[in-house]
Length: 80
Image (cartoon, rainbow, N blue to C red):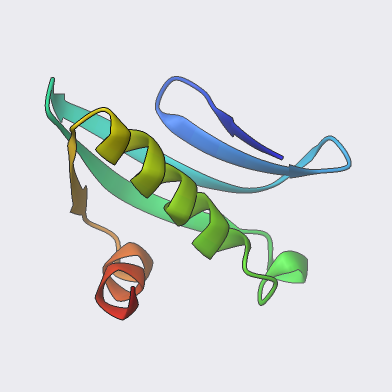
């Protein structure tokens, strides 16, 4: 389950947070993805990619530009 909070996108399994994306709103038309994190025991299951896909779909549907600041998000964007 993916939830959008204030400046955080959270991925939950069995009601436990196992991953998140921290983002900041630069202005009304732009956000920056600052950090992508997945708990070590859940890595390799595609959670980070699912959260980034969610962020991409959500923010582009709002006509917002996404700046990929953290290294993982930059790699995801380039491999997309």
